[in-house]
Length: 422
Ligand code: EPZ
Image 1: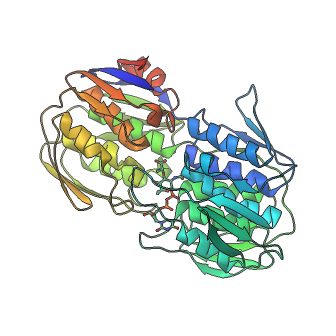
Image 2: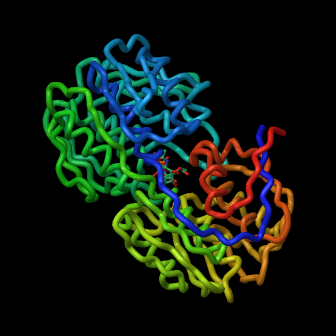
């Protein structure tokens, strides 16, 4: 159980490069199951979630290797066991998106229900509704989703919207299953996240026929078979947004490479509104901030709205703003594990239902704090960079799930982070 010792305050300055997207890599790894043979995923980051997903694929019969180039080779020629085991899926919810590919490849699948999550209650009812609409017989047994489609799947018109809008992995599951279904499928209220567009583009390189990519209405003309992919994943927009917030929180200046501003328009708009400069640049952007930022309101929404995965990091920024702000969490109403930890660092926060009222303070103060989930822990790192004194963050394994060796990437631009085994 590693811990971080972080000395603050520091001012970040210099160049940093964004890695490939975790949340695009995971469903694309699942897509390898759709086409017997060797697929190659380029640019996937070295993260514990990627390793756990590789274990899941190995467990069903794939051979997964990380090549010397860093690419991930997935040989899905032999799928012997169409089962997503509880022991793996409980560690990484994204394991659920193996369900659609297994079902259409093997005609049946058993995948563990994901179980609890620190960011709140996360059902998969919409995933199951979509797959049933494609003709799958689905029941729950012993904590497992047992799905059957021995007679194949058939195209259908599916409304995939839910109480919080679209579902990202739900769209991925149904989209992948529909590629090999008989006939045409229309998915309405599909997720428009860049990670879903990346998955759809990858599927089209495999021979799928998907149109409407990037829009809430996807049309998929089923095909008989797909071929393995060799595909480069998009940059990680949430990692890029985290580095942008880090530059602003430390009143620094970062040149962020391999960052697509087009995937972050809501975020860039918010940063500029509060006084942070974001200059586009050939390979990414330059983010700079000289003084205190202005207060503002943030409401998280499905893409292209403000991403829930940057809510915690921006709460740190607004905790140091010159005035009062409000953050409203519309995707995961209980996603506030970071609030109590930030309060330990002297942030002035008041939680009201699925909103937090933030009264900006002049400075944060170091304290021992505990990471609880991936993005909350990234927020604690940002807070520690700005806080006076040495902050100790425990359970940093949460950070390793989504940020590759973050200390080795932030220290060269001015951070003082030491990783220690507890
Ligand atoms: C994806 O999770 C991301 N994970 C999450 O990032 C991200 O926070 C989330 O999308 C929203 O952007 C990956 O891509 C691996 P959803 P997902 O289904 O697909 C409700 C990170 O930090 N819902 O879009 O699981 C659900 O409870 C992670 O990298 C249903 O009600 O999220 C939530 O309130 C955390 N029924 C809302 O929809 C369903 O069947 C959106 O969830 C499915 C979802």
